[in-house]
Length: 67
Image (cartoon, rainbow, N blue to C red; front, side):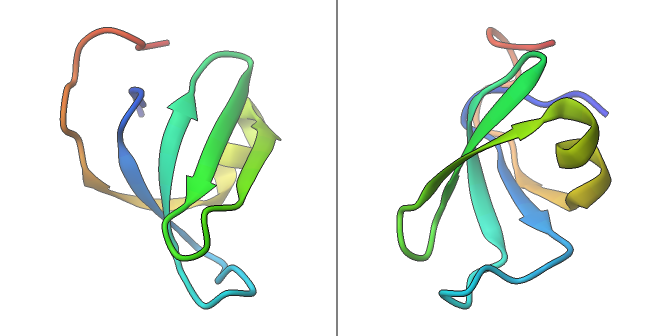
């Protein structure tokens, strides 16, 4: 699966604020994602992030920060 900066993804587990949707802010060996419910920013390793993604909700760009 390819991820781009600005993608909105739905994770398998719910964040404590109640939201399932996160925005991808950085891609590479690590991912920085921002909760769309409360604004919390989290860094995850690539394997952990890819394992926890359920689906890509929207892909605004599709070019640029791909890895």
